[in-house]
Image (cartoon, rainbow, N blue to C red):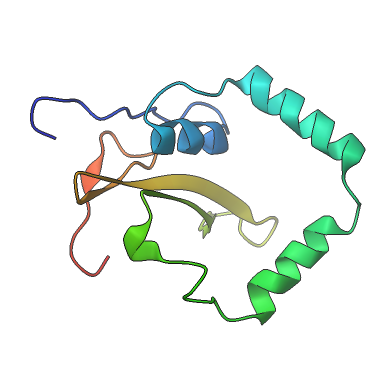
Length: 122
């Protein structure tokens, strides 16, 4: 970005979700304490089967192009399975953000040393 730096938090501990949120919002909007508080509040007010319903919708239904228009999105939060040497023991997941600024998409993964400009077709 000419003349302006991108906000890019780097990975600390296992806080990739926090970093992804702040990176997609381009500033330190959330803190660990704020996210912990939100999780505690949701845990006390959420139906225990809600996670299952979300997973079912994600795996069973096709994406509706009328509802999800990625070409119009300013930012996307992604959650992916990470390959580890211990993958047979447990599955590790990682959150990262992709943000479009002035028509250019940037990979703002907190594990990267700096934002990476996306390529056409990515």
